[in-house]
Image (tube, rainbow, N blue to C red):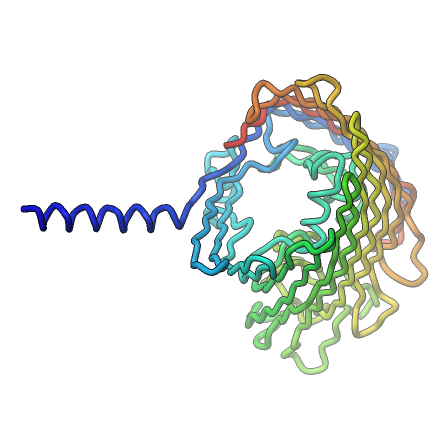
Length: 427
């Protein structure tokens, strides 16, 4: 009897020790509220007054205005001698949709999934779908904390008043600034030494593609790339610089096919990740739509630098981003964008937090000979913290874009306004 009790006690102690060495955390964000906005587009080539000044207005009980709703699991296991294993898997949620993922065709949308090892005093490495170095830096240095509203020239979206799962007007009037996440990525990051920390990324992607009778009947789309960055912390000062370069190559199976169409127009579209599948789009992960007449041979170079300083009563921000996506077949065809932004963020009272930002930039859509569009934007926002995990928010943003060219040669200018009030809960 005593031996049995001792055996049970030993097994229980061993299980308790094993449990103490590993941990799994469930976390997430749910963000809902009222979202509205409008976009105005002025088209110089239009013949009717209504087409020349096209205004679209939308409002709804929406979602994800301040933060994208998500559900995640992260865990660590102590392997001994300062070595540990870790993992993260995170999915987007759409609380206002019948399908909580926002897309019934894809199930839960993968935001991050990776596994890695960490050695104390050296650093860590991970493999999987992960944020790029630039996006990680933006999350740490953006006064609006990378919210999903108009008015931010660094963390920006496409154009148009959205009525889909985003629930907000992503009407920027300009294109996105950088790639947010990459699949098939190896990342490394050192521990901080004398305030300095370095990071890197290597991406290796390969997908065989078949697109029917008018497109590829074989071949592959290969996306690869790399990134390097560093940051420095000294008391209340923080600075970061990141660079990343990605290359997409289409092996065209059709004899004599060219990587742009006969009219000489390369549809180079800047976008953040796998959401776009239009031929010529520059994306962060594999895409499936490749047209043999247009191809996808794109070199995409991106750079970000930022600094913050905490004065105590407020925190100041300065940011700069640039991106150029070039057709490797003919470097005269490219999409190019750069922008700079400043901002502040502060607790006005122990429960009321506010921020403000303003920025400007420029964009060339179709390469040599195309006019440069200038844009500017600003944003105001506030949080009222009901607790450490729940807050009410109000955000207003505006952006204006000067004349820019289109594929038809028309000059287009426009503006957008976006506002939201809502509640966000983190867990």
